[in-house]
Image 1 (cartoon, rainbow, N blue to C red):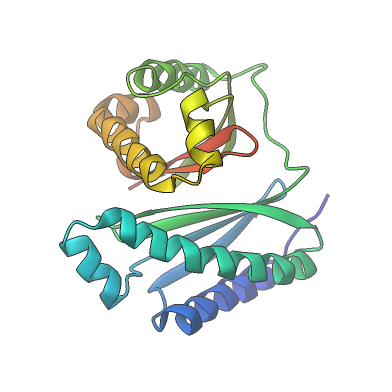
Image 2 (image 1 turned 135 degrees about the vertical axis):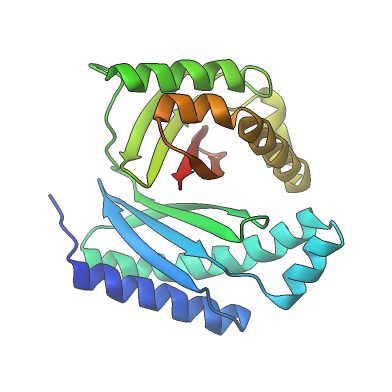
Length: 228
């Protein structure tokens, strides 16, 4: 079992923050890295360039997202190599999502062997979370075939969902029509946030933010609940 030291994680946090500043011309106010079950979770806050601010203010969200995605993708591909050396595992894939309203984002980097707690012997609270997620998702998207909690503490709950793509999603992805997929993600997040009180009752915690990342190749997504 690999255990990254606190010094390793502090180094990676600083490295990623410096790279953001180098590529975007501006660094985040907060950037910290957590390692759990062969995954790196990078939390970023107060990070928006002047150009992005203009795009958001003029309601050009898809353009802002495409700009950030193109740069973050390049940064993550470079960062994966460094992170693999430091932690001692071979990271392969990454996912990210950003909320311009709260000026926060999350990046998830994983190996091909990331482990998650399965659906057996779930706690009562987990069963209630999955039940509510099914009810809410059914209103806006396909109900996932499988749910797994990959991280849960006082600050965050991250749920991995598999078997999430509609046939239309796959076709849009294959045709490179990411604008439509991004807009659908925004609408899905908005609907989840409309049901925030229901989720807060199940978690027994206030929800500050919500992220949804997609893996169109592996037919899965991660839904991230950030707590206040």
